[in-house]
Length: 144
Image 1 (cartoon, rainbow, N blue to C red):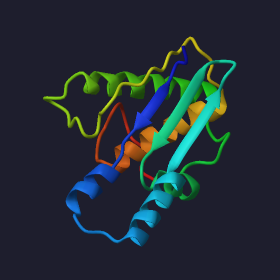
Image 2 (image 1 turned 135 degrees about the horizontal axis):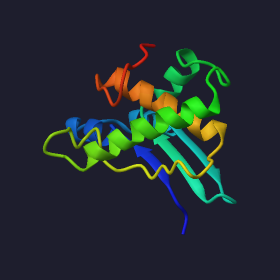
Image 3 (image 1 turned 90 degrees about the horizontal axis):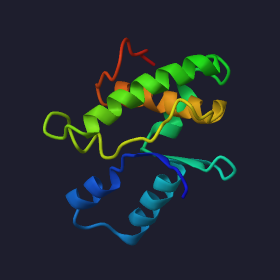
């Protein structure tokens, strides 16, 4: 079985529910934007996959995130473990935390070495998420 680390926050359904009439051209533009805001990383030999779907994350990553290799792999792994642990706790408490923000748990295991790129993207998504949605998962959140 393929293990998945999935972060899925889709605002397309909210937009689709709130608008009743759209022309075909605007629907095509929306689907193109959705595709460009999807990041997928997979490694079949380690059997993992990361999918990040969130409008605006690609732009934020390119313009505001620290460059690759700014943080060490150990730093990213430690932060990701803390962020993902709190994220998963919030998924289990939909009455306390917004279930539209915390839709599904993340299967992140510290004993598995996912590599720099996966940890870099997860870390930056967590920073983006916390800043964009005014959430604090753990500790001091860098403002970017």
